[in-house]
Image 1 (cartoon, each protein chain N blue to C red):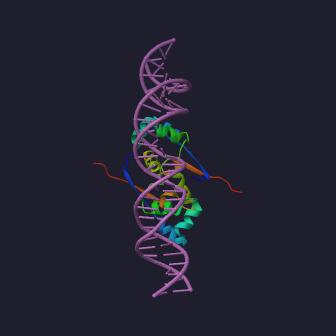
Image 2 (image 1 turned 60 degrees about the vertical axis):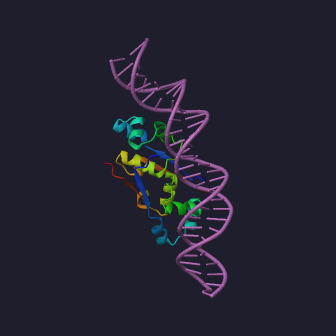
Image 3 (image 1 turned 90 degrees about the horizontal axis):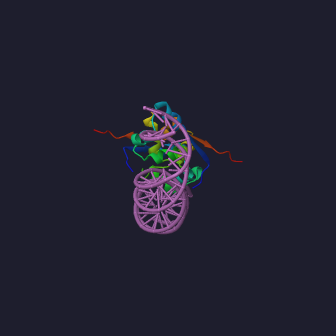
Length: 74
Length: 74
DNA sequence: ACAAATTGTTAAAAATAAATTACATTAAAT
DNA sequence: ATTTAATGTAATTTATTTTTAACAATTTGT
């Protein structure tokens, strides 16, 4: 699929603030630890529902957790 | 995968405001018309990147376009 | 009423996310 | 220094999204 931008996230920072391990967060949102690790490392693009659940776990809005930067087109 | 909530969206309303067809929106975000139709009908859960691109097309935040309601657990 | 555009929906294939298993590396605790 | 917990990452499998193609149904324009 076409990708016209890049996804970044603040999962490691937010986890550190709460002192949660990847496993802790994985348990809270009901996915595997590797899924959290992969998202954290930007290895893939989570589903919107998972993004909502992660944001809710931190009591934040999605854009406080995930940032999407459009790539400039010339 | 576990689903502990429901996703809703306002795509049809936002499209109507802009007078965009499904095809128009599909072109703007670079997916097929059927992808837009399927998201609009809640047949599936888009990727976070696609959700960001759709929101950007409407110049809105994600949560103005998509709403995620957690299901009550007892 | 007719034609054209738009939408609803489905099926099959392709692409990508997510689960699972596994193991190596790093950090923390004793 | 040794053990234990936490993280990085890779391979394989499974689940889901997305594409493509197709056709029916509905809406819009003339």
